[in-house]
Image 1 (spheres, rainbow, N blue to C red):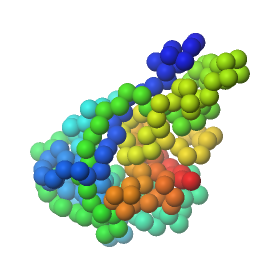
Image 2: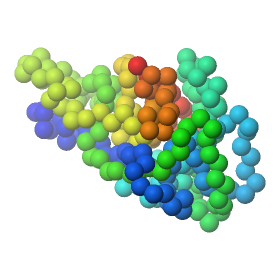
Image 3: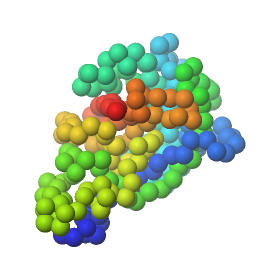
Amino acid sequence: MNITQIKDVLFKQATIFKTGGFRPTEELGESWIGKVLWGKEGESIPANFDPICTLFLYKLPYVPKELVSYQLITIYMDFDVFNHLNEDNLASFFKIDCYTDLDVLQKINEQSTRIKPFPLTPIFIDNDAPSWEDSDSVDPKIEDEILRLELEDSIEYYDDIVEKIYSTHKVGGYPSFTQSGITFEEGYPFVFQISSDEKAQFNIVDSGSFYFFYNQEKQDWIVYCDFY
């Protein structure tokens, strides 16, 4: 395989988000960082959980197949998670609500006390690549081809194959791990990430991200965090 062929196989589609930059409407369909505007009547939110993100999936240019049945995902977080980052699964520190029917929603307007809220603009990309060539996300055959080209043609993965690493809020694509050698239980594909956001004044330790992996059959989540 040559570089072009590797890119064709390796690159994935995703939706990334730009924070702010337009006047919000606070209507259905608007994604947010630092705010949850919609929920079901009677839903209880533990007092220690802060609203951190609203993702209206049906408005996005790309959604992974594991999430296509959902119209909206809202995420609340217990900030005590930062005292437990060495744990394998941080899902217990997140309240992740998935909605299939927008008709059941009502406006709740929950705003974070720690994140400056901004609406998010979705942007389609088709060149998302793993942060590491030895990532568990890369097919072993493709990894072998990359290593062969590095040895035989003196190419560099980051210079010659990767076009950009999208370390930002993202749905689909690859997790933008800052550390290498990360593996997870089979059956939990990566579906989205929430990343450090300077504009929203949200720093995950040191320019880190929370990565969300979802088992559709079990409706079960794994959440992982890494940082510089």
